[in-house]
Length: 113
Image (cartoon, rainbow, N blue to C red; front, side, top):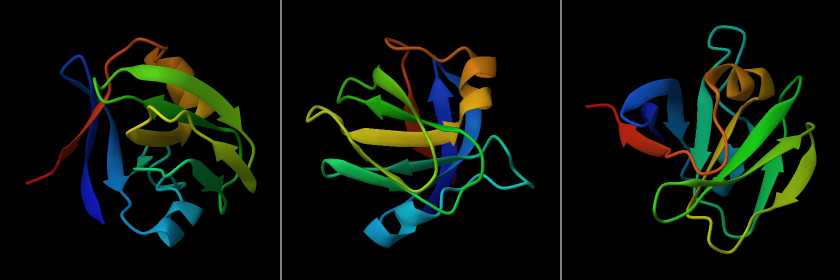
């Protein structure tokens, strides 16, 4: 696991934890302490959203670091991602709306040093 930030157009939009284990995808990073924290993963076609409360959104990002799709998801659901997805970010849905993230916006993970 690596800690860092999600950036859009050079601005930090959320703290993030990059998950390297498929099992880690079961428990996204956001909690009551850090409600806008994101989980970042590199899916192989399917993402399982588990261990969360409330609505979350799955942001599918391609190799050019652009958001290609935003999907609202309920907990304990499987979601397939487009083949072009190189990174997926899971954020609370209200954070996505508040931050104004939309398809076509740039989004990248930058590791904390």
